[in-house]
Length: 94
Image (tube, rainbow, N blue to C red):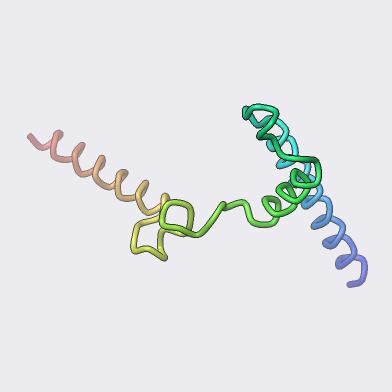
């Protein structure tokens, strides 16, 4: 039990470090002019925040669609597949 917990903690830390490095690279690749670019401390903070919460906010465009009464991507795909199947069936019958 103790080994499993250590392993999961190590794995969690590994993934957090990996995500921080990824967001840090993205912060450095910013196409803004040099005067607008973030300072190193701000880049580190940006990477740490984004690694833990990748969604920029919880507004209707960025957040969970179910919260705003919309269908999720999986639900939209399923509806499109059903529409395509229905359309194909109607084409074959006519």
